[in-house]
Each structure stands twice: as C-alpha cells, then as structure tokens.
Image 1 (cartoon, rainbow, N blue to C red):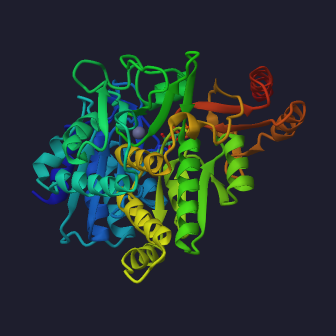
Image 2 (tube, rainbow, N blue to C red):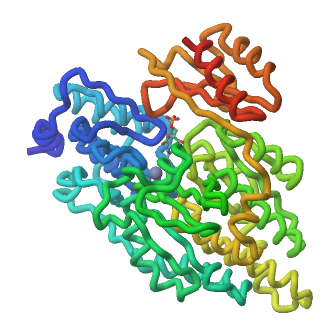
Image 3 (cartoon, helix red, strand yellow):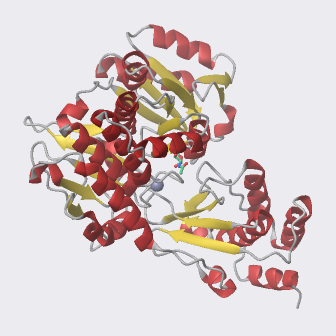
Length: 501
Ligand code: 16G
Ligand code: ZN
C-alpha cells in the first residue's frame, strides 16, 4: 500500500462531518472537542509536511487555552516557537475542510506547491494541556515524538531567577510568598515540579492544582480578568500577592485585595509597564543605548499607553489582537516588551542587544558598581525570559524578580498608574465578516457609516475611546469602551452596541 493509500484509509477512521467547515482562527482550530477528531488527524498530516519543508521540528499544540473543558483546539508551531505562516494557515483550512474524496488532492496540492521532498524526515513535538479529550493516536502510530527535557527548562529559569534575587537580599518571608492559581491546568503541574529548583527564593502556595477542580472552571486568568474577582478556591488575605495562569499556562494576571476588601487586578498592561520601567532603569544605569518598545493591542487601557508614552517615554506600538501579531512587531526593536491586556506576553531581545548585554555583564574592568550590577541584572533578566513564546511560569518569575530587585510591594506596583474604567461587550451576529477594520482593529472600514457613528459617541465623554471588531475566535462582534467614569463607560459601550445593530 502506498503512503497515500494509507493516509486515505486512516483518514476514513476519523471522518469529517460532511459539510462542516472550520476556520483556522487567531489561535488555530478551536471548538467543541467532538468536532475535532478529523482536524487532529489532518493537522498531524500537515505538521509532517511542514516539518519536511522546514527540515526542522514542528510543534503541535493541543489546547483550548482558557476555554471550557468540553472544548479543545490545535495549532501548529513553527521551529522558532512562532505560529505558522499565513500561507500554511490557508493549507490547514484546505486540508481540514476537504471532504474525504478530495483529501488526497488537497494534500498533494500542498506537497506540489511547496515542492516538498517526501523522503525528508519529519519531527513533531506535541504539547497538550490537561483536558482529557486529546487525540493522540495518529502521532503515536507515527512514532515521531521529540523528547522533552523539562528539567533543563526548570533549571535554566530557576537559576536566572535566583541570580536576580541575589540583588535583593533581606527579603522577608512575606515578600517571598506568592499565591498561584493554576487554573487546574498544565502550569500547575509544571510549577509543582519546578518548585524545588527555586531554592526557597519563592514560596508558592498553589491552588487549583488539578487535584479536584475542573480546568478553567471558576478559576484561571481569563475568569479573573473578565469577572474582575478572585478565583474560587484561593484564600487571599489583605495585601497578599496572587497570580492566575490560564489552562495552557501562556497567560498570567496578578491581583490583590486591599484593606477595604476591594479587588485590584494587575493585568498584562500593568505587567508590561512594570517590566518596561525596570528595563529602562537598568539600561540607563548600565549606560547601554538600546531602544525599548512596548507592543500592545487596542485593548490596552488608555492609562497604560499614556504612562508608557508620556512618563516612561518608550516607543509604544499597537497591533491586531493575537500573540503572533504582537510577537512579530516586538521583533523590530532592540528590546520589545509585548503583552495583551489579557495576560499573554513576553519580552524579545535582538541578538545585538543580547550580545551587548552579555559583553558588559562579563566585563570585569568596570569599576562602577552600579553599572556592573545593572548589566548583570539585565543578563539574568534575559535568562529568566522565555522568548519563544509567552509562558506564564517564566513571566511569573520575571515579575517576581523585578518586584524583588525594585523592592516594590504589589500595592506600589499597582499605583504606577490607575486604569481608566472600561467595559467589554459582545454581540451575536449571523456573520461577523460584515465588519472589517483597519489601524490595528481600532477603526471600522465596513459597514460604511459605523465608524462615523462611533466617533460621534466617543466625543460625548471625557477621556473616552471605543472600538468595534469581529472576534477572531467566535462568531461575535466585540465592543470595547473606556471613559472617565464607570457610568460613562457603560453608557458609551451600550450606545456603541446599539450603533452596531
Ligand atoms: C486568541 C489569542 C489571544 C487573543 C484572543 C482574542 C493566541 C495564542 N491567542 O485566544 O491572544 O487575545 O484570541 O480573541 O494568539 P477574540 O478575537 O475572540 O477577541
Ligand atoms: Zn492560553
């Protein structure tokens, strides 16, 4: 039997519901797990082709991130950790949506267009979160796993973190203590394994650690961000620092409760500001002339943007929603800090920046102690960061390290700027594609007249901003508004929603 005959026969074991059409969205295919059997099979095929084409290991990430447990998803990850290129997203849809009788044609089409040599070996690395419904049979039978070395990862990050904390002696136990909500996801499992490498520099109380609760259910970064309240199962006392991961541990948000019992959220914008401030400080002290930029999306709170531009005086740029867009934009700078408000993000250092920092950190002729310390801190910062992809554990260690070095409490961090009141709404529509946008999704292009209507509404309220965009993950339109008071914000959001209908 030829390779192709085998593919054809095996694919019939994972039949595609006739007529079902799925989109490769912002974060790959994602829907109820029941509809994904054929998708998993076919993405396996495509991953093999992508690996043959790039002659490198390709990642297949099986997760529906913060979505409920009955959902699942899959996305392909390119050799450097980034999402596959747009032309391959197209191929993935051609394969995913081909009816059984034309599947081979679709497959051969990719092979031909990309001039793939079928003799080339393929290597696939599979990641998954803690959902049960992962479909691994295909990959298992192909026997093409790479071997993960978790210990190497734990060691590298922990060592860098411990290095950072060496510059913050005399931390009290309170300062070392952190409550972590693992969202009953994969981050909880990894963090538990990792703890022993942290040499007590971080004392973690882990909640929602997969022992009983359900994945992302009333816990996790998305729940905390959207509900603006602490997750279930976490007992926090006044002023205690807490953070939440999401199910696949690529998002993180921080929060605490003040003495009046009020909940304070420190989202991706606050994290980006904290890190941006720290890096700028250290670069100045080290006397290094490297450009720091912060990349945000339209969802970034207006106060954060204003602070970054006016006070910190760093370059700020705005991209479309979705990690791949931010990641791409951040690559343009010496140091690109990128975070979505929802907690996805990391920091990228150009090779030239890494080189300069390493050189300075190793230069034993520097007499100025402040300068030498700053260079070493920058060096450890690079090592604590997972530059391939936003990673909640690495981001957590980075934030903890920065707070320690700067001697900041969670309240002091929170006070760097105050968020403008904001509101997100969603509108169910038959076809979200009727709305198209430009300017990093901040302005509507079609239908005609809608942007003018939004502009008129925004003029009514002080410090206000609003935008309308089609979701990249669900069949809905999203509306965002912010203004000087919560009342005005809610009124603006409501009026914009009415303009969309
Ligand atoms: C996906 C994106 C996330 C983005 C969200 C927006 C990745 C890994 N995930 O979950 O970054 O914030 O989509 O969803 O890129 P929306 O288009 O429905 O608003
Ligand atoms: Zn996620």
